[in-house]
Length: 185
Image 1: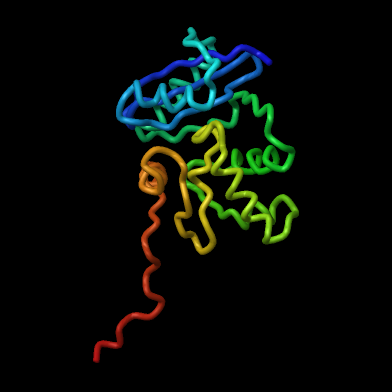
Image 2: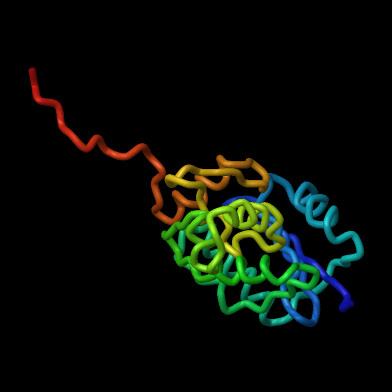
């Protein structure tokens, strides 16, 4: 197993953390209000990681994250990931999620269908999103529950953070406008 290094950095959304090895990005921590909190959360899942100086590709990813939280449309799909330890179906789910662009959403069921699985696999998609080791870079916040409902979000702040990230991308999850207008009686 390759050695893991990490960096904690500040964005307009708070303090984020990124971990990497020689293969690619291994872990990403969505923002919290303090560097210490972010570091604790990151190391909880990657205890052997050591602080490091990021190579060029990781520096580019950090700058992309900063631009994202500043409101700029960013495509993270070019960054190499190390998803070692993930089963094949989760890897397929993550690959499908990486194709969801800025300002777009899909549902757990739609990803299951895209992968040729039945509707019962929507639950597996939800599990993959909950266990996503590199949230934002694999944009699990863009995957919603049936009917466009927000669904869960295991990042700090829970569903509120998911809504904020989607709003940053111009996605509004308000109730639909009524189909029929008042008759004015």
